Length: 177
Image 1: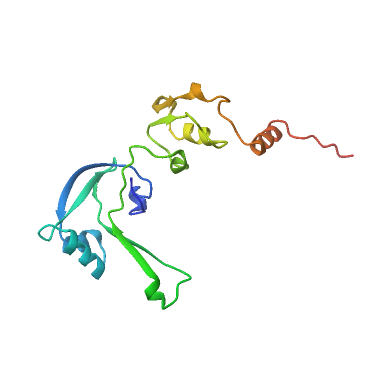
Image 2 (image 1 turned 60 degrees about the horizontal axis):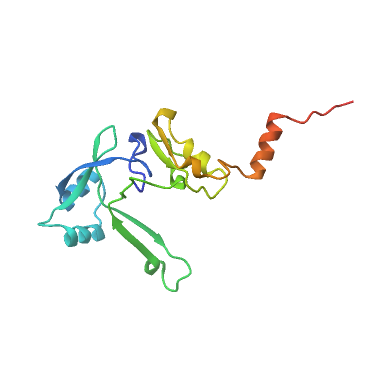
């Protein structure tokens, strides 16, 4: 699963899921050319320290539309509240922006549409959590539900949501004289 937006038009966005299908060697010069990034001294050091014979293995990921090389990238921020100049407060990390995603939480899935899902409803601990998990797939045939029988009170919602829903189903009638 991608950890950051790479190309929104191609659907390579934070949370996009793919499958690593291969690795290929990549030099720092190829990283600059193919990744369309300017010279970065820290990235050059990263390649030098982690590469074998000047080449770093880069994952090739199939996101369903095409196979895409995923290059290392820099993520950083300025820490506030520290003494000194702003440059001294800059911290960053360089990593390949991928994490394994054979499973992830309902919270992470919120707002996503999944091709298929296996939802374990063993112990939803917040109102609406089961609904979020159950409503992620495009069609019900691609949804598998585990441990639904073990929920003592079934799928539940917050009281505020129930009150709001009841008002929508039976709107109050006002008479104007």
